[in-house]
Length: 338
Image (cartoon, rainbow, N blue to C red; front, side, top):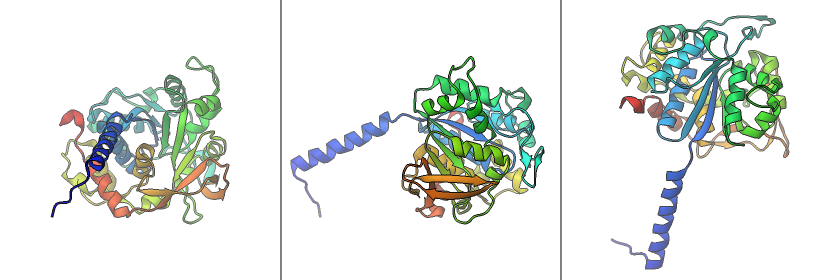
């Protein structure tokens, strides 16, 4: 049975559809800086693959990938993934100085091993030979932020917070006369932080490694922060579709080397943070009321405060549905290779 709409209503619906279409068509890609450790867990690689897929679809503009780990293979690993997606010219920066401190021995800096970073760096083509050859992370942050429009950049951290602490403490240089704090306040729209645990009070890895940097960055960050806690990514298992990806994919190989076999899934802490950085919480998650998050040796505490600039993700959509969407994006062929 057909239902006919009055002419005026049909015109309104048609106009609305055009407005929606035009709005989607002219939406600007989100300018993103990804800050990763690219050494401890393989979800860093999955998150970078996801970000490239979102860039291929016009949703994201990747400004840089910046590494928070001192592992010399981490930055080359990121470079190989960038190259695979046809973006081998993306800037890759690396933290300089000592490695992060071991949580059980706060004064003891250690170089963490990785199950995949060296293998990816050695098996795939790219330009960067070592993290030692990459530009200084703080200088790269300052240069890229200075070049962007005000209140435009989204920074998403899926590793240690060393670089953000260093950025906030940085002083005027050839890129900008502003202090690091003023540069962030002027240029950064929001920081999406994969870190913390808001379901229970327990240590979370990204905040406990270099815990002093985590505490400083969280306490002093001057723009809105969205926390994607451990409990969010722990419920979202991805990677199963990578078994169908060609063997020349560094993403597939990284997962194989990390897991020791083809197939299976892994929690998606880092992918969740990237998704909310680009698309927002949207229909995926709810946001907590505004407040303040405190981090003490990797343990987070949320304090409601209507004037606070911190929120954290709360589960809303079915994690399996989010996982299915992430799997499709992570396994999508690079646009440059289609």
